[in-house]
Image (cartoon, rainbow, N blue to C red; front, top):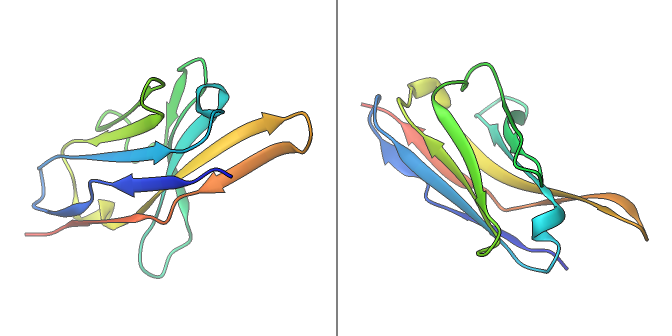
Amino acid sequence: QVQLVESGGGLVQPGESLRLSCAASGSIFSRSAMSWYRQAPGKERAFVARISSERSTNYADSVQGRFTISRDNTKNTVYLQMNSLKPEDTAVYYCKQTVLLISSGVNDYWGQGTQVTVSS
């Protein structure tokens, strides 16, 4: 059973930075795609960034150039470096692990989320 635990959220001022971490259990991390999503109050959960098992990345337009996703397979951890934060980045940030299993096809696993608040 995969478990994902996010950390690193908090309250920051506009223009500051935060780094989120998501630690995964299990032995399938290195062949999983990892993503970050976020959900602001009253809005649907939205894609933020993704890194494949081959380390290719893609980002939502709203964070391109400010956020960087990376992974450390030795630690089963994915990171989201967030720079130049804006109030509109305020949301609960969720980590998602996607893996293709022969037995069950594509499987998605979600973490519990970590709150990021950007406010002066």
